[in-house]
Image (cartoon, rainbow, N blue to C red; front, side):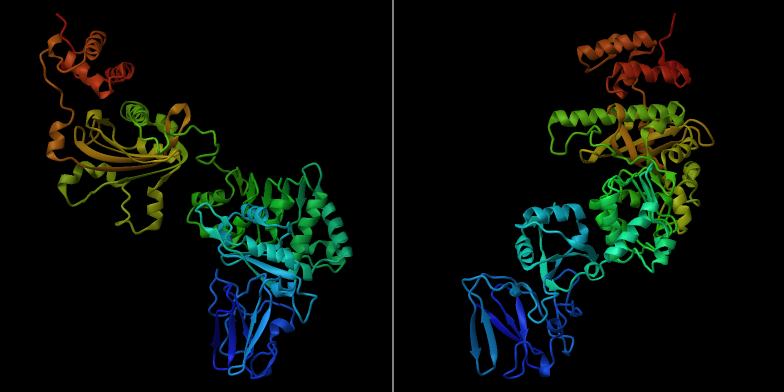
Length: 627
């Protein structure tokens, strides 16, 4: 039943609201026909066979599809009505000349879904709109709709209008079935997807479909441009092809009918196509090309250079392709990125398997294979899972600082991902004499509150593992006190681990040799090879130590050199200390400290001892005196 009737504007135009939430308008002239507009003017929607009318200023980008009579001022708002299987009953209210239509108990005629009563030639087409459809992968979206629809359908002219996805279908039964799909599909965040269906003119590509003789000529032209040996099709500057110009054919690939015809020929005649060159075609959008995902799914190389693409968002319309090589140079979008790394990253978001961009090899992505070893799942908070992660992180830190302090820092290359980032920050005040020990770090410090020059900010953010290691190599030589380390793992997923390290170190060379500094280091890492970690982001903060930190740094326990001087150790640990002391020649307290610093890993403690001894870093008093 009609639940309410609204009067809109000052001209007596009335909007009938149905109990299914839809509504339609009635002319307000007393005794007038329901197909008349205000003051007897005809409604253009009916007169022109369902052409899309100008949108109301009330219409939102992703709201219901609304129509209005262009003769009305102020505009009258309409919303689409839905199908109900009811019997029609007509009631007149003479006092206001309100005409109420109610459906009950039987299926209405198909024109109620949108068939035009004045012009049936265009009335069989329907426009299907999915609000926020651009946020979904096209293939997933269409497959989901198709699987929930009670009848098979072929979408025509799929494209995007702002945030909405839109396509067209033919015949009322298909339109009705698509309306039933609305709110029956959920996305990954369990949000229901709405679908709006409204009558429409025939889509552009259908109205302007190429004639058979034009299709034949286009096919011949494309055949001449196809390289069978390379399975490559060269369509650059297609509009100016002499064969097409000679036949007075204007093939502009920005037009959906031209792109649709081109893809149709590709599908039928070049099913094994691997490379497609669309260079220099003045393409400024890729709506028409989006069907290439279904028409030519094997394409691995796509050349879109020298076109008019202004945003990387356009590439999302063809991101279903498994591209390995892409050319975009010469498009305005290339100048919208601050640097090359941002450019590569944005394009790779669309094409994760991309290996070459604009003719240049690009580094592999951080995660390229589903078989990459995984960290412990976040939900596994068992003691065993925590111990595994703890062991992984501590082992990584031991190996990292062993190389950082005592080896060639170029050996740290293997610890970083190819596209890793690193930054260093210090709280340095050049006017404060107490901060002189930080002077060596000042030129590399990246404090965004102070730095105003964007070029300097980008320069100080080290990007790629070679730049990072080169930067670390010029920092002063150090010796970190592993016993001072405080470690915290503060974020974890199956593919990423974030942890921080706080501690102290002293410089062993240079103008500030012997000075003790404190540091905080934050690592973001992914699973690496050989059950290790691979750093993708590294942030280092260096500061002066407090007096307490300085006093406790590198302190050596003083004990009487005898076997009874090993307190509160298990029998096994006491045996390890005795054995280590015997093999290294160090006193028991030094041997104990070395083992404790290495988490009682005898082998690793021995490796560190050997390196320290070779560098002459162990003082003479650490060794037992020989008689």
